[in-house]
Image (cartoon, rainbow, N blue to C red; front, side, top):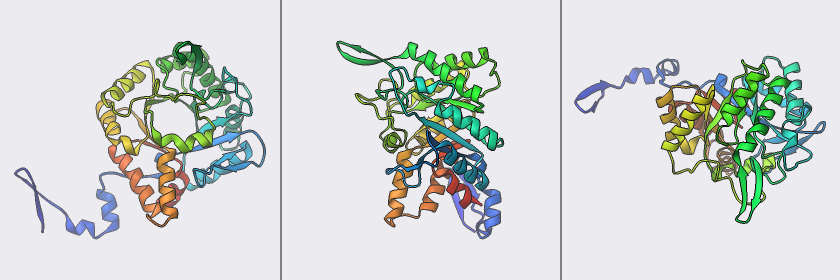
Length: 333
């Protein structure tokens, strides 16, 4: 028997429990399950299109028919949900492809809900992929340079969310980080009769260097400047809690922390403070680093991926959004 001491309190490390894998699972403090996974997918127009994303091995831009196949395979492996991003054929200054009735996301949602009705379809609500300049909102050029117009952008975000719900999306997920967008989207959804459509807010989305590979996948890199004026400063933790509190007050049903691994402290504080359903987005940079290190034989891809996801669960995540979702589901079996 071994005794450890915390202060003056002795506790026993049950050595015999450690010898049995079944018992270890029973007494494990944190459980990792395929039921917690969400797979992000990138849709673009065409047929039989699988365009590899160079910076993200195993990730593709997919035409709706190919995306259906990818989603069906993941669902069969045990992944219950997908998160859709759209890449339009044409971009403009008003992101009109984002809220077009027959936009690429809207088409794909209808196909998925027809062919895989049990699959939970979440749609990313943002404008950057559809804007010719790559920013998440309308732009005004002034003497001091360009700036993002927060309030006029809200109407376009609300129109986008309503168009996704009308196509059959189960959950809408605004990722733009405009102030007040949760209230604007919730109000628009309710007015159009989508009172039961949940809203998952990218509530604590940081201006992170970990997004680089995603911008290749979504073709959404800004043509000038950066997004630090509307995404969060990585140095700020208390601000993240304020952002989450505001989104909850405005009507968010689920809140998200993005990225995941570099912000586990934020994730833990948000879950402890609010007790709300909380998602962690393991972003492209996290995925690509594991893939690159594994390809060089430096790490065990399966072990590191599952350990990383377990860390997010331990920190408080209820939902794990990861490009490795299908692989993780198979490994967990």
